[in-house]
Image (tube, protein in one colour):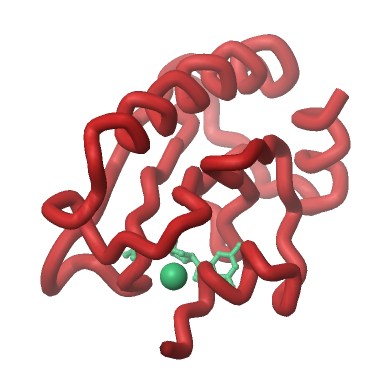
Length: 121
Ligand code: 5GP
Ligand code: ZN
């Protein structure tokens, strides 16, 4: 199976990882809507919401909560939208949760290296 997110987990494709443990990995979206746009994925391949399990879902949201704090501290976000696409609107068929920061004032997009170093402090 050729899954781009499984390849990221295996390290075959590089990613700007901001958090990782035995169950999940969180990294910067390659095409960010705003500074600090993150994806959290389970290490096990689940296609979508129907195929995940409750333990993994709970852990993904625990990690989302801690990364929200990080985004507030390091990027001074004014809000955060969580999105999880399924079916026709899901481009990558490996379950992922988007964390999309909101800023009251429009921000120019920072270099990914700079966002990454702030979020891994
Ligand atoms: P969705 O499946 O929820 O529609 O969106 C998939 C997301 O994955 C998109 O926001 C896209 O920019 C991101 N994405 C796709 N391929 C890669 C990749 O190789 N690396 C990273 N970091 N993000 C990716
Ligand atoms: Zn996968």
